[in-house]
Image (cartoon, rainbow, N blue to C red):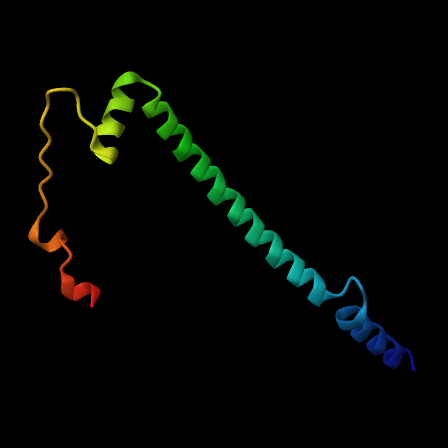
Length: 94
């Protein structure tokens, strides 16, 4: 009789209770996912801080403007060199 009650109690605690093993397992996996996401965003914040620090100087800002936006100084010529494999053809769009 005691063994039967113990088995029923064990099954109840493992599967049907509000604090069951399945719910704990699900919550632990969700917690691990959130911790991984937190670590990813911390790394991204550090990377963004480095980028902000790099463009906070006059030279960094000029470098960003020249490289990304192809800006130039007055009376200065800029030549953009494109290689054959980087140029998209009309066949790619058809």
